[in-house]
Image (tube, rainbow, N blue to C red; front, side, top):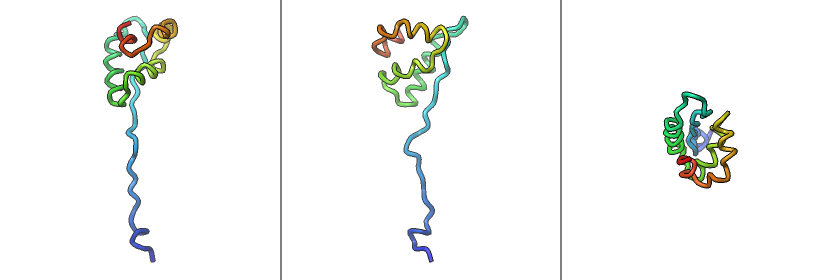
Amino acid sequence: MPTEQEAKPAVVTPSLQQWRSPSTFRGAPGEDPLKWLKEYDRVANFNKWDDMMCLANVYFFLDGTARQWYVNNEDALDSWEAFKMD
């Protein structure tokens, strides 16, 4: 016969919320960088990224011309604010 403790179903609560990913910005003609930055900031806020994490993660959401721009300017992009202003 199971004890009272054994008869209770296990309750599992997730310790971390699932994080979200912003869209990828390519720098293609017709893409709006300000609209993308607004989306990125919204996702970063949801994910609770601070400015350091925003800057560390942005590389992974850039592609094509935008990623090449980032690679060419990475040394000058020493803060999230610097990235957004450039």
